[in-house]
Length: 505
Image (cartoon, rainbow, N blue to C red; front, side, top):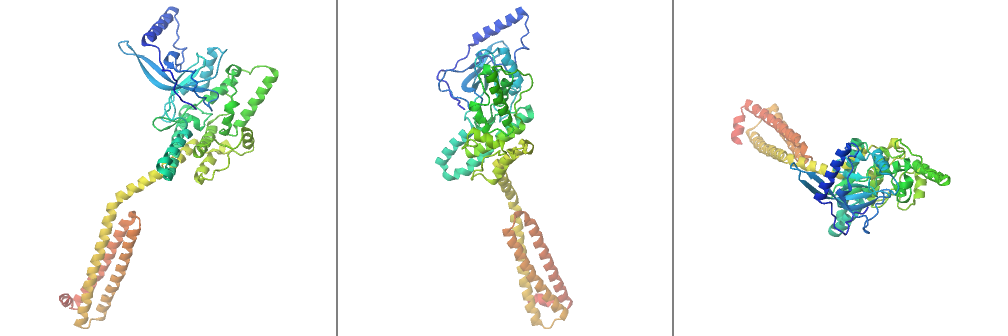
């Protein structure tokens, strides 16, 4: 998809001319008693508000957009102030020109635009969807006007960044590029989900060259509904006027992305073209909804193929021609072989989105959540762990200090008991129960010291969230040791040796 500036400067009508045109229009409406407000579509964008060059040789062909071409231009919005002064604002836009219409009445085009849902397209507002400013059906060629995106298609943008990153950061850039790819794909999924859920719009022709990147570095969905418009042109009998075959030429390439159920539509249309060429008749005009096989489920499939395209930086089924791809998909082979460098988690997501049976495909909402996890999950988890560690740093330090104080207290108790033991041995015989109690105190002290040492080791190697439990356990050990010590002193005092032992110590 090319978005290049024309050589000549862009200019719109002067404010004076616009004022004259509006005044003339108003007088004609008044004199003829016309009510044109209900006849002019809200999406209509008159030619004097759009300026672009169709003759510029540098303008490229918009592959994947069913024969349309893309130009860079400017749009002029004219508004009246309260004092009726006319002012204008200029914006850079992309102008998408449709197919040549030499002999088609403008009324047919307006009906086609309305039937395809152009009025819905111009109401879409989302950070991950390109805004369509309006359209015109009364010019040749007819066109749509949308916001200009600075960085073009997704894979082109990623390839440029990847090249620059390798030059600047070397091998370290690979992980960052993969993360960025997932983040952009997540943004694109949010845009597509908005089209589905809020506007009931099926894209129909999704591929990475109409997932664009805007000036803020966001992935945005473009060309939504254009496939449906082309199918409606086919079904309405206007194909010969449009000089358009939706399923041949560049559009045939769309089969690389499209779901297997779209093959039946391709086959039926090719058969109808062959029949028409033999009979010389025209396509039957239809007022029914488009026979396009595109659906929310096919959008999920094509978006899965876009994920594969973004990860590999190349089109799906790169080494196969369209005939081979058609045969493979008809034989229940909806995916090309897995590239070796794609992780099992990523491939599992692609497989679920590109299941041959539409009923078994994962929903777009579920896929969007998976993409969010791939793009932001590690960052969120790391941030949460860091935040938790910061919050627990102070309690952990306090708990460790308390464990140290417990051990110091036990050391002090141990020294006193050693002195006590020596003094009691010097004083002579103790009653058997007193001796047994004293020995029990020493044994308890040794056990408590060992257990507290284990607690301290665990506090160094364990999780910070366990420090409160360790602190409580250490305190309980100290209480039990002190209890035993008190029992020993009470027993010695009963024997009349407590004061002597204390003095001796």
